[in-house]
Amino acid sequence: MIIDHPLLGPRDSSEFTYLGDAKLIERPDPDAETATRDFYEYAYLRDNPAGWHEELWFHEAGDRSWLVVTRNTLTHEISKVEMARDVARGKGRSK
Image 1 (cartoon, helix red, strand yellow):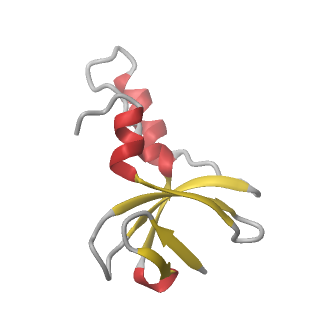
Image 2 (tube, one colour):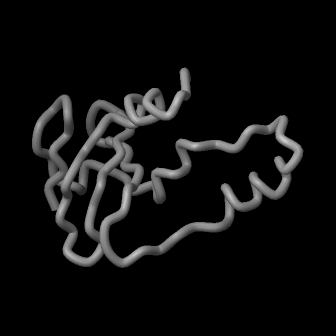
């Protein structure tokens, strides 16, 4: 599978480490009243969809960047690759 890195161009997926659902970017608020339940769900409950899914990938054998890859889990077709920092900033995260 080839991942088209936004900065480095096409790369073989063997350079990357799959890290799971990209919803990990959306950490719960630790000061919320429901923080215990929210962090339990964040840490342990994951979707396992058949079809299009946003995933986190780490470019371990390259520039060590984090990517959000939109991939079809049935066909491995990739429709979009974004820098995770840009996705996080778009969701209001500053760090």
